[in-house]
Length: 309
Image 1: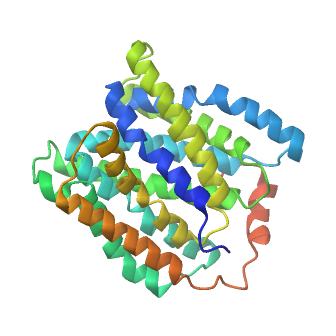
Image 2: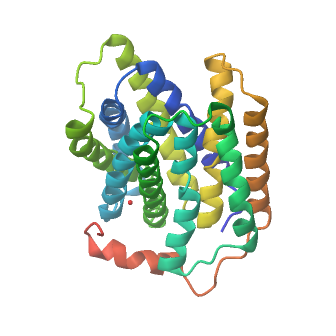
Image 3: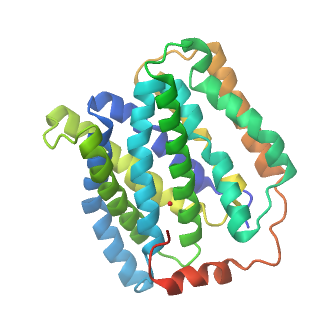
């Protein structure tokens, strides 16, 4: 397995702009999640057709659809967590994925995290907390208990999504089709969860529609195409750690696009995350020799049905 894949970093950069586009659109979390997926579908369909002509038909798809359901749950819960505890704390809670993904890899594939990763996790989460502005906002949450539960739930769903994406990505050269299936699953979950909870506004207005289109292009199409291409070749712990750069990049994008001035503690948090991610990738342990990725993924490929992301 590779130590680093620049496509994963590029994908994290695209997804880090999502919060900015959601904020500029001014819509509810359910509306943002739905349009993020709905507007991405017509962009992904031509890529899927081109990929099919180039690489032939793909098998399976149940894991990708199941992963998409978890992504939709994550998107809606993330928006609810921001309303309850604020963006800074919600960012910290969602990034429990950095622990969820390696634990799932350990349980399913017996892929043991390295000691360097275990030592770096507290540093990563502390850096994310500072980068998200946790130290500067103080305890001014609207509904801290419920918001914290939503944030943890979003992080668990996100970790499951990343894990299933990593497993499904081992099957072959297809990248656009898994993203399309996951997007359809996420859109369905956003309707099931978002409509009765926060509602979905099908007429958000021209300005909001433009920001939601940018969200779909950057966060759902470009971001996940790059992540799906880079994630399967990395150990679970390294891939999850690299994706922790998203909140760091969000702070930098906020400074450039919205003229936000990061506090010194936020810049210190960014430095902590970058250092922890570098340490994790640099001291990556060799992958276990008794697990063949193709063999591990074969039962899911033959099952042709989604598991119980």
